[in-house]
Length: 332
Image (tube, rainbow, N blue to C red; front, top):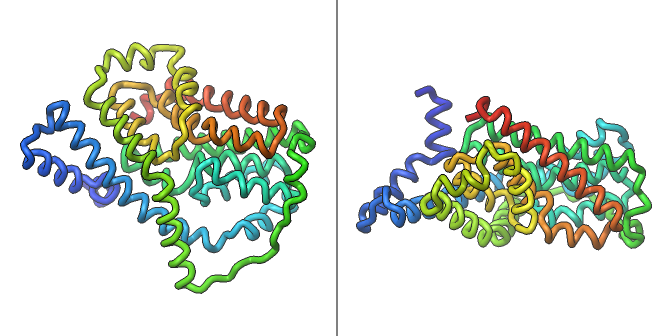
């Protein structure tokens, strides 16, 4: 095994942790190959692995993010137009490890500062959908090609969605109060110790927000992995079923979780033979179109713009799902 493969298995997939948890399950008298033992092994291993990776990655990403406060991000985007601005907005969204609801205050600030509506929507789509932590976590559970493919399609959805909204000239569909929100021009300069403190606080804050969803997601994943027959999953979401992608998208919308909570479910679904495109559609629906985030967004935009945003992102997710199901053999 090459060095990269060893590092991927031991540092990202944490094979050592899997072996340790398996030994612990056997020590308490459970068989890891049984349903109960396998569920315990899946749950403990995934929970510990996700929280270790999550804490380390959020700390590192937040330290970098401390150089890009909202005011600086706004200035970077200010005065830019066209698809290049949408691409930049989507890329900047990847360094903000926020859920969709947490991204909406930044969306308000950017809109109040006069940034083009399409650019702010590229940011709004990208921020919860794609971030550097999700890349590493996806690679730790699946593989680097799948992780990079997810990031690529997420950015495509964000850029195209923002561009289309910008072309539709729907600036008048933003709530009136948004444009009167005060915008600070301060660009905070931190010392190294302050940045470390900021990163530590971000880890604490994000872990406090996501831990219930991680536990629920891992619990659902363990149940799917060890208790739901593959035949049942295949009958509903099998790769040969044309309705699998729309069903996965509809199932994902009412849920509210970060990508960290959806990953264990996605892992279990892929293990049961569900197509990669169907799994990606589910993950994207949860992170970009969750019902709570749409309710919050309704408070800052009018219904025509909300419907347009939802429709564009939904079409993008469905298209990605069908395409990736057709080319799954390239990744798995």
